[in-house]
Length: 364
Image: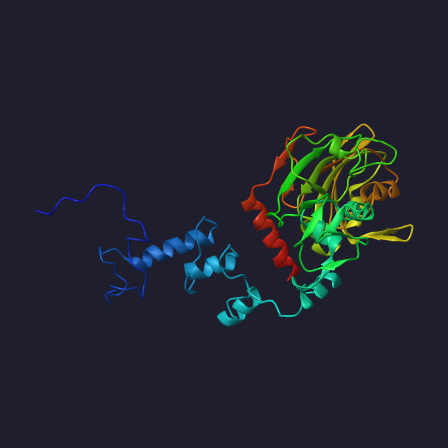
């Protein structure tokens, strides 16, 4: 008796089916497959169907490409791009990673001079500078105090602010010995409009010191904001830090938001990136973006590093705009955030030390 035939559809050619001629396991039986069927006739039928336009994949004698090569040719992230496979690995690595060449940097002239000739702490300095660094008063105020005979050295009143000293040992102000400089402190102040960034005004107009809360140490403003400009103003107890921050060579960015009346395009603002000259004054690179429009008023964000007198207003006026509100929103890493007008917030010592170290690294 013959064994029963297996039920189900016939096996198709392909993976798990009959092997093509020359494949592994091929028997020299004149074109017979392992199951006894004529593989040659099956191929003939399949080729005839393809010739008649029947859907199917034409045979090819070319080997199938390796999957790794396909990924390289596809240009996926982390794989070689077309044309790079023939290049040696060392060439690809040198094309991707080019180490910076020493000496190619072009620092600011003042920064380069400071790095070449670092200041000597034991070198004599003007007493006005030493007292300002100790937080007694600004240099101008110290000069006025010396003219009034309020500053003395070893009991003898000084008559010139050009007096050179190596330290404040034996110096008194109003009969009180000047203490050694304490660690620098930094405060964020949300300056409101309607007050001047100065200690005193001959015309009697209000100043920032009229708006500062009580209990603060002797502080000095870093830079200035116009009377009608509001926003972030940094205050410090260290005159040396104040001077360092105000130097253009330090390159600390300041960010402003201006509301201006008139018409301006984004392209005009992008052209400010190359700097410009107005009335013989050269203004450096400015990053400006058009935020939004409200009627004919434009809100513009501008970031600059020089901070010349009324720079933002003059640049926008040069573009035909009239600034009707100006807010400083950031100074370096310090931001205004949601501080209320007239509020003061102190920067943590850890953050201040990190920031000052970053300034020293840039100066090098």
